[in-house]
Length: 102
Image (cartoon, helix red, strand yellow):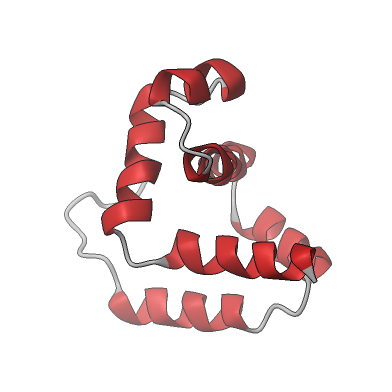
């Protein structure tokens, strides 16, 4: 059981981010994330990423929920991150758009 009073390890996060940055393709990412994450964690991340596409199309929260089954709360969290977050969703979304339009 994880100690709830333990502060997050910034060094641990940094090494994780460095490890992720070394992934070279989708196959490597799949292998790494399937080892790292539980099926529920992968599903949650996949759900959030699915919402990005619908949100970028300007669909209302309720419509995104109806089309994806992702909770309205999660939809709101993703939209807030798209608008006020660190820019990660937008960075990767734009790269994918650029790659598919080439």
